[in-house]
Image (cartoon, rainbow over all chains, first blue to last red):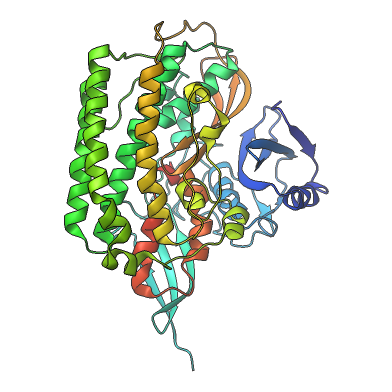
Length: 123
Length: 359
């Protein structure tokens, strides 16, 4: 548990992020961490007057998270990065790199979930 | 009738020390849109947190970026120290400030040289890099390395500065200050420099805040935001006021970085004057457990670490948000409506570090 952290659900995530924006918070970034039960916690970090605030969203395995890139444009890179590295998918991403922000299209597995295996191009 | 063309900018380009690719949609030499493409130097360093123990991760974090290596190590160390409730000796905190500000100076001097080179002023480029050598010599003489100084350990620092070394550093910084001052009129007032930078890549205060701009990129648009104002480490004992310029163009961003060299010299002087006696590092027992978010100010801006420990020597997660990563969305708003010839200067004006960005 991080100080000044609040849990959100899939239904309330975008409205809570919108509330942060209306309150004058700057979007800092997003973090993800895989949990033992197979779900993933996504943390949304905001700053206002040098005070950090965080929203925590637990994403069940196999489900898509609502994108907040429509609220904060800056979130698009963080969401694309989490898609590449942690295999998370976002619904409504304003610019979707389709898993190729960092990774080559030939990469078949997700770095932070499994070891990367490069498909043999000759195969 | 408009004639739109897509022009690739990068990943290999004379002004780019590191590879980033921009797809520029241009209409009669005017850029209408820019779409970034990354992935040329992604190394998967965050993944190493599960493969290297939390002491070894300092070396990994230092290699996220050579130029900011000291401050990456400070941010990571502070994260672990916070998780393990380690009280870092005061002397170590001041020494961290001294090496951090030396890093900021050599980063800014490197950038000022590259920036001069971007608009074709090679003599100025060489002058800035000549001055930078003094800082590199200080790093080498005090830590053994010119760029990745590797002085941080969990709980403090591994190297000390003697009174003789401190006097020498201050003497060297006096020369650096004079030599930088000698270039001030050229970099800030020269007609040819201003003709390439004033009005190029304007980002307003509101855009900077909305898009999450950090560091000199944000402060060049009037954002009075600097993580050193948080007072982490020994900064809480030092007088510090961030450098801010309201204009939001490439000139304003270079003005901020130039004046931050003076600010860093001042901080080193303050830290050297107030350097207390004491231990260099606290003893470390056990393993980190829990979650923490830590922020520091790197030469390019705010850097954030999210670290999760599980009570073993390996961490569950290290997440690093580097300043250039935050400054790419702002860059995408600076480029539209500029002339194609100004793109290199504007891209360089955010001081892009792609190694940092991709990790």
